[in-house]
Length: 394
Image (cartoon, rainbow, N blue to C red; front, side, top):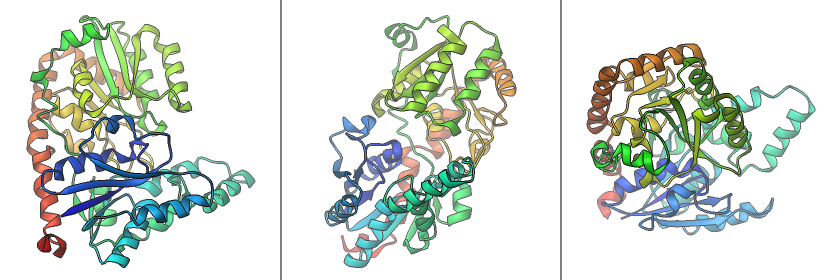
């Protein structure tokens, strides 16, 4: 049996969750990942893995993309379609395949896409410019950042045969089965890495206290709050390492410039890394901070990097957003969002209590193995696919 994973953009981190769930199911089924490519290449963390079959079309023009996507939809071969996020290029194409070929359609929702757009448009002043953006959004309905795309398919989720979600908030809103962002706890195994050796490789002293943020910088992720908190902590041995900077992203570039002005030599940045290199970078860290802000964009989102850090037995500070408090109960620290002062106090507390930090990190890894590993997610996923007749016929 073959499963077609439909993603909204193969050149963006939007394909990250699909890739990881594909790796879990790959040993049981043939897998293809299908989607448009709005950038010039497959998202770098995925591009080196040749074990996955990718089908894509590079989106060009204004009217032509609709024809390109229809052509791409005819290349879907799966006995079951697994669409990621309720959008035109995923749920829309999946529904078309379901109707034409009578195939089961499973929908995965890992964050509230309409919430992202709602947050963006709420921050805009009322007037003609906003109306122009909404009109442009209607003309470019196929795009990820189209307000009308997100709104329309947000209402179409009931057309899926099955829904999986990545948080309890999303379960309450859309129903379905919760599957958190699973991690390969064999790949993410701290015993496989020499912390001092890796630091030496990247020119970081063993005397430094490394706070790491790993992920694509976005305004709702609260990195500015973390920068301020590091400054408030008042410890010159602390170095904030941000991994995931894209030089072509204006927000990320400005963030890096601002961080350098505030922290100077206490700030280091690295570009995106292949998934296989993520545990190596995390091995350098003394503390991982996930400073999500609280708004429409984050209300249903559980940061995937929380599970990376747990698997690597790292002390973790996260903000009280979505399911973070429950996930890190007794094995991490929770602070209120948008509160750099409280975050700085938590940072000082962790570094002043190294034994407690180590114990909580170890507990976090054990919980990740039990609840958030590939093995744990595999049981749930197989149970879902077995429900459908296509599985029985295969």
